[in-house]
Length: 269
Ligand code: DGT
Ligand code: MG
Ligand code: MG
Ligand code: MG
Ligand code: MG
Image (cartoon, rainbow, N blue to C red; front, side, top):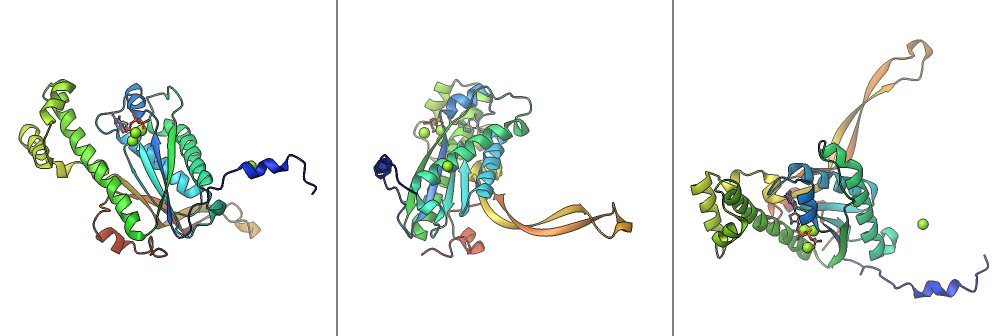
């Protein structure tokens, strides 16, 4: 096909190919979710509806897009790890980032009513995205450990903070003052002695975040048989094994998870 004289403008597109042999991580984060959570009456400090909706969106992203081997989510963020050897869209960072963000955001709106039955969606939420490359299995594991450690630190803080406000009647400023300079052991002690909460008994989803990995599941379907004619209308069940991205609420920081799921990092180094 003949080229138009305008064709040269194509060369203005910057090359944003992700370096080969690296894990490609896309992390999304809800835009101004402090406000969004307030406006939509999210439970404090954790709203299971909101967290489960985030996970539903992440599952949709994994099902619809290519080459995502694991995802990790907490609070208003989700990280997606693409295969080290992925050649999806020739590894263009902008494709990875925008497809993840747009698929996630449209899913958030689409599935909202399934999770927030009595709470209308008041305005369209947005998500920022970034791409980060990790050159080895160790740096990727450390990335995921960093996000999970962040989840733990924030959740412990928020759990005590809101207990002080909701159960002891402190103002947010007073609760903040009370927690200034405290370490993990102090926070656990306040929870236990003042509120009879053993932090380790709090739901795993809140303490650990959500890990999505591909798992084999048997799906049972009822199907009508076409032939023979005399049996028309008869139904039979068919069981098919499929892989689906299913949630785990587990530790990613120790070795156990990676030993149990050796396939996730198998093509890396
Ligand atoms: P950003 O990301 O810079 O646009 O601003 P934010 O406000 O999204 O800040 P970020 O991402 O650092 O913090 C997440 C906010 O989302 C934080 O203010 C608490 C809120 N949030 C996330 N999950 C929950 C939840 O389950 N319940 C409640 N009440 N708030 C939540
Ligand atoms: Mg932020
Ligand atoms: Mg945010
Ligand atoms: Mg965030
Ligand atoms: Mg097109």
